[in-house]
Image 1: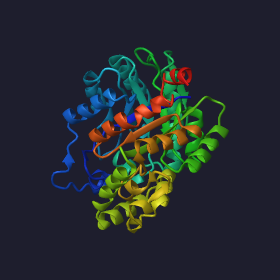
Image 2: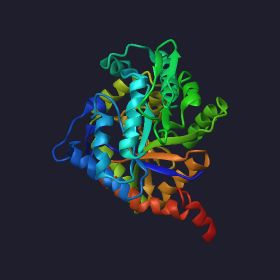
Image 3: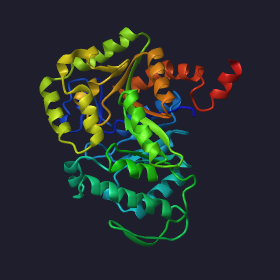
Image 4: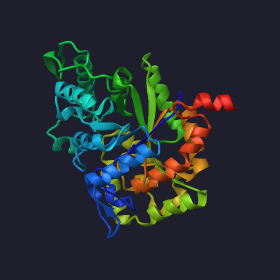
Length: 374
């Protein structure tokens, strides 16, 4: 299976440091902060489209702009770019979500992808009025996705479960195509839900051997066709030394007090995936830039202050392409990437790494050409 590349829309703001992007620890430094206004986000979206990314992930939460509204505003600013809209099942009804997705598909002419975020932080969930515990949230997500798919069938759909009851739920017209469901979660409660409902199972950027083990667990739970994706940052340069120097500058900008505050919050998360990311670096700023390299060209420094995706591909364009190929060899076919700042890093990756992946026949539509010329 070939590789699909996606980028990221920083709807909480962008800049040349990592500190200002971590949810509750935003500490903008003079001259580094870029507000997430629609013109700047449109610039990133157009760049992502121009350099060959298939889609862009847009996050969800109280610390960023709403993903549905922001991406809808960007449809007319782009031509082919798809929008991977993250949303939380517990804050809207499944029938409304099905309707919103169906409408989105029609007005975008089929450019919607859906990232279902069950939520691993009770404090964040309670801001939205959601008081279920961790495992109950995944149980609800399971029912939610059953209803959404039932409504998308184009026929009135009824369902009665523990969390939802709907009767004759329907939409104006079934979405065409049906938006694929991207779904993440590392806990014992999450994996069966992913196995039953996901089109693409997402993991954060753990070392390849750990990702391979997680893929095997999901595959063992289902005989459905399912693809696998990974969420990573990237720092790619013409030489390895330049890339590590850029990573070092990000690390040098971190305030030990901000790291300590972030780690306190992250360790309190109920998310098993978040705990696995925290364990990769241990919150230890003193390890230095190369001391946080947890696998060749995989760097855990971002996770010192940022929740969620906490690792980065760091190296020359060729080294980054090699690590992507290593992930691909264990079953990863979709890569959701980002970098600081997102505008510049989209160019670095799109102009530096993507051509190498294309030469190797790894991208959609490129494999036949590569084999014919071999």
